[in-house]
Image (cartoon, rainbow, N blue to C red; front, side, top):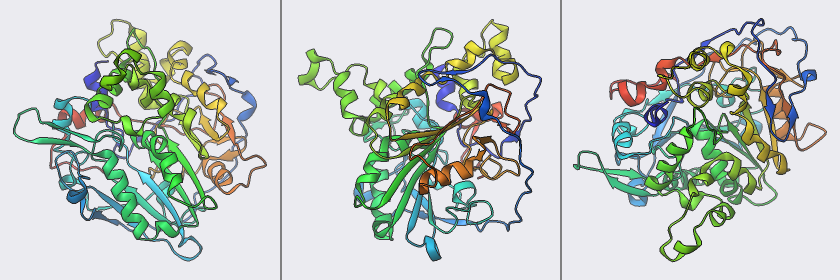
Length: 454
């Protein structure tokens, strides 16, 4: 798959279709490097449950960041960034959940120029009201542990996982592209601190996809903003992107390399990783070698000192379609079938996605919930596994139960590690697949009149 297609991939789809994966499909055992085989004992009998009765969510209004221009904290087009805040109540009035929106990356002047005329590059095209679902829901039946918290959805409009600090002329030479993700992160957090986050008794930073990567990048910084006695943890959802080779290419690394150098994300990268990848002959010129490797979660995780819960599918639908089988024009029919339907993939095509997870095994701050469902972003879509009638279960726990037990210390161990069994063994999966159109429509087909359906 060409790098341009990866840049265009829209990680915030409209309501994804649910695809029931046939139990008759066969796939060899998926191995997580360093973690051993996925245990078949993880898959349990489905409990009979009914969807709780709930009321429709109240739309939450967009707040544009005050004094954004003074701080240089602006979207790609120079417009102010924004967030949606739903105030907590009762016992949750001093608890905060911050969710970082996802939506792919832009790594060239052309892709970033195109992106700035969409809601992922400009607040001019963002929806003014959205519904909060999943971990952001205020419905105790669907979100029992966090429903009463102060919940924030931070909009993504920099194209660099809230990490860059640079600017560049646009492709037409008539304007400026602002790569100010890091400043947006800092300015939004500063404003939220003034609105009560500074007095929080407990806090959780989370994000989906590119926002999941941002959660990993900013996890330690988020922790540092609170006194040591305050409970602070991080939950990256579908944010573990491996540096894989597919069809002889490292497509994801090509994109990340562009982001790292175009947007100047060095300031948020792990310092130990930067030192390890610095060219000693060029240090006086501040030129680094292979620092794009430090943008990958497998490297970031090594430096995380904050309790972190990695939520990912071992068969991430977006990664299958974009990394495992990256070339649409490949003459190999098996790869084309794999892109179209996970049931057609073989073990070698799948194993590449999760080899990087071995890095998490050495960090005792890392927990994980890695299921075998064909999905992408499981904790906040309104039809995600977070609040479906029959949610995926690992270790006899749903995702809601696993996250809640981990965060509040209700599990016997502070480190919770649940790994799914071989696809398609888990009968609790009710997976949804991202339609192919969402992989390219932002970069090639979105217009300023289009808007996301949240």
